[in-house]
Length: 246
Image 1 (tube, helix red, strand yellow):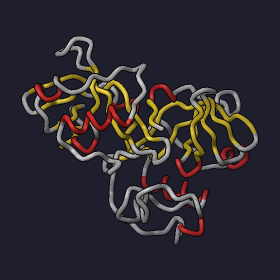
Image 2 (cartoon, one colour; image 1 turned 90 degrees about the vertical axis):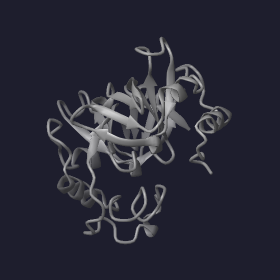
Image 3 (tube, helix red, strand yellow; image 1 turned 60 degrees about the vertical axis):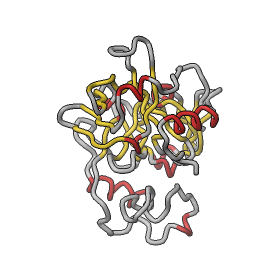
């Protein structure tokens, strides 16, 4: 199911033995544009503390009940490595985190999830969990931080990042929702991360190899609309690109 990241904010987090708080934001990597952690606001349960939940521990989203299911118990979460939310998430911290939960390192292989292109929750297939392999290097970015970044087309600025659309099975970011109101009044369009050519984290800008005219003519996206495969097929066809589902 494709869900908006902004819509997930505030969803309650249901652990094995009770609610642990609510979803706050997400951290994703700047190589695969995959969600690596959900930031949990633990509210009055762990006062003043935020914790990270890996997608390996997420068991789906219930939009009707505004709930995300977490395959952990409260004691596991309470004893998990603490994090300073004022500092970037370091690879050293991720190593401690994975070691605590016994998770494989997503950076320890050639695919989005290490040795696998998709999340594998069967521990017997993980190989050396939390291995010491260095793998590829990358940086984690906050969904709140990147919201508002400018989108630069081949021939000039076209709008800004408004939201993200996430696949809650693979936890890949499928689309950036771009608001083009400064150039195309009232219109929103979707851009796949695979079409991004570069990101300037210093200048808060996402560069894409498409013209403003091509983006202008793209199928419009409405927040209240369901993302159907027919819509996605039309979107990819408009840009003459192959769909991620192929």
